Image (cartoon, rainbow, N blue to C red; front, side, top):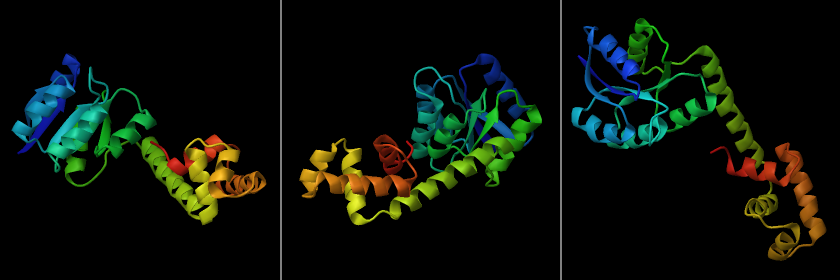
Length: 208
């Protein structure tokens, strides 16, 4: 029987999920917490195989809790539970160890299907979010390729731009003329398909 943990601050949602799980012959709810702080103490004691984690929690967020929990229980599968299909939060959750997400309005059979999917190596999420996730990582790959196409000197200039140096300071540091710096910046903008120093710096540093 698969052990399930729940981290949810809404009593109604918490009890609803626990009931769905306990009524299934294949799953058993072993731990229920209403905050991330409690979860990080209690969940390791029960070692659930799957955890349903609310994204929005009082105090520490569910996303931060997921990252910390994966360090304590590396094998646990975490499904984020959310009200809205918010791509930014879901991307952040996936980067922090979550395996998928579930909408709070999901029907009981969808909850059980999501749990079964993560156990089998799947990543439960809607088609819309799945497409956005694919595009997100495809965009990151494209940016990495663009940065790799910069010459060593262009990379040096861009690194200094990202650190906040102005053209004169960059010229002094690299022992080149200001005109040379401007020329390098023009080529950097063209290669990275950007129009400003800020956009170029963001592409170098990548999304957080």
